[in-house]
Length: 121
Image (cartoon, rainbow, N blue to C red; front, side, top):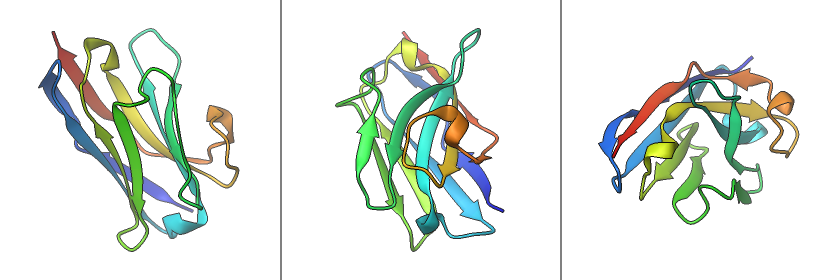
């Protein structure tokens, strides 16, 4: 069992930056592929970024070049650095853990409670 807790969300102006953190307890995150997803009001939860156990990273086209996912296995934490934020990035952001290296939401077994990111124009 893995418990995930996100933090770092907030209100930021367009063009600003935020860094989200996802801390785990229960089991080490080094045994999982980790992903970030987001859900805007009235929309389905969508893939944002993934980092495999190997360290390989993958991004949704909408965030490529602006967001960076990283992991610190010693700290059992995954990060999402978000730069050049846009109003359309406004959403609740969730981290999730999977045993399968894919970006499909249904493949992720464990989820955090989410953290709100609001980008004002």
